[in-house]
Structures are given as C-alpha cells and as structure tokens.
Image (cartoon, rainbow, N blue to C red; front, side):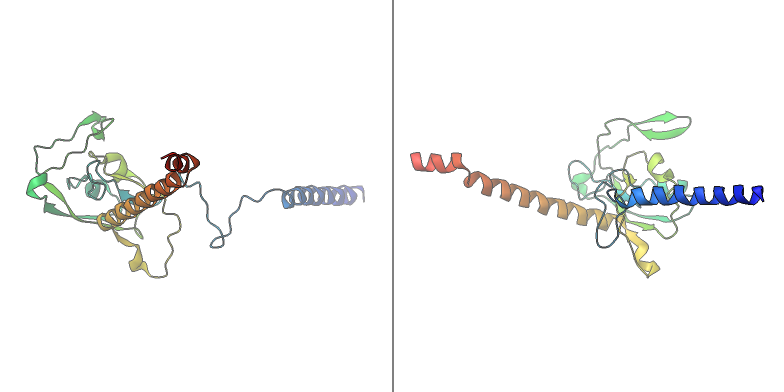
Length: 204
C-alpha cells in the first residue's frame, strides 16, 4: 500500500514539474520560427550547400582554377567540374600560394586571386548526394569554395538540387551589384534632401 502511494506521488510530482516547465515556456518569447510565415535572419553560422567564391577583381568570376582537387576529395562524387581555357586577357603566370600541413594543401592567409590558364566552364554540384563533409572546402588550394547560408532550399523534384555553381555565382554578383546601386541611389537621395543640402541651396 505504502509503495503504491509513493509511486503515485512520484508520478504526480513528475507531471507537476513538467507542467511547470511548459507553463513558463508559454509566456516566454518564442525562439522557434514557423516557416514560411517567418524566416531566420542570423544565418551566419549555417552550413548550407557549397558555393563558389568570386575573385576580388571580378565577383562574377570564381577563384577556381579548375585543378580538380575538390572532385578528387569528394567522398560522395557529387562535384563535376568542366574545364575551359580562360580568355587571353586573363591569362597570367598564376600560382597558388599555399602551405602544406600534414601533406594537405591549405590556402595561405590573405590569398591573392590570380586567374590561370584554366577556369571552370561549369561547376556542377549534386546537392542531393552531398554529405556536407567539407572536404572540398578544406582542401581547395585556391580558397574558391565555402558553405552557403542557403537555408530555405525546398523542392519536390530531385533535379532542382543539381546546381551549376558558376551560374549561381554570376547571379549573386548581379544581385549584389543591383543592391549596391540601390544603396548608393538611396544615399544620394537622402543627401540631396538633407537640411545641410537644402541650406546650401538656399544660401546660394
């Protein structure tokens, strides 16, 4: 009899503790985002599919020198790089500044992008097969790959997850260019409508 009472008391206590935790959570600010009604903004540390890094001289042109290291290192075989010759005006005696750490080539700090005689014609990623292991990112001697923050990537068609990363980079560069133009136009509009500007025109 005493054992049954003790067991019932323990069960009731457990329920009460659980209800207390749930009750406090109800009145706290919610941290869960219900997609697609809302989206998370702080995606800086999110590891999405890989993407190409643009060069400093031309953000639409990847740093990739089509060496094939990423394809060799990928355990899933989900990367395909088609090589092309770079335009004559971009050819140079390029080199890859890297240091060897335990036999692996690692991009040197502050890598200066230099276009060689080869460049990727197409850089295709089959994201449906990618395990996000990061071997390609870590072993790229040109520092041409990184993880994206593309979190909201949904589709019912597997073919949609086959991405041409070079084409995507060009689109990203164009979006960045348009955003910068819009920012500069807004700054110019605000400057022309500022009290200082109006005062200067009145004084003149």
